[in-house]
Image (cartoon, rainbow, N blue to C red; front, side):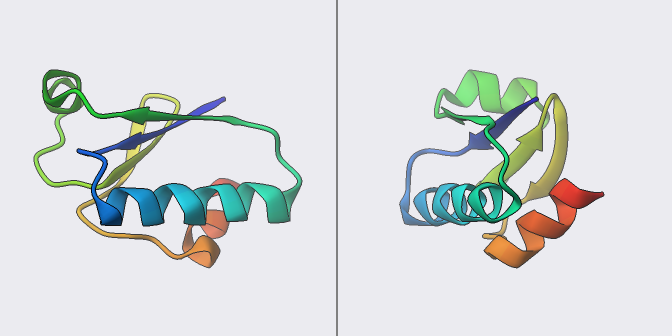
Length: 77
């Protein structure tokens, strides 16, 4: 499994990355987290509002910073 954070690298994108890593650590998961900052690649995922979170190739959140608890809940689903 791979997790992608899609966004320009702004403060919100960094917060989502941090919250995602916190959730992964709490669940004891060792998963690669990749930051996608290229707008062409972001658009190719169908994302028009960032930050976005993708698990594998499925977009699970767009346009908001999820808390660590929210990310944890998504990962457990």
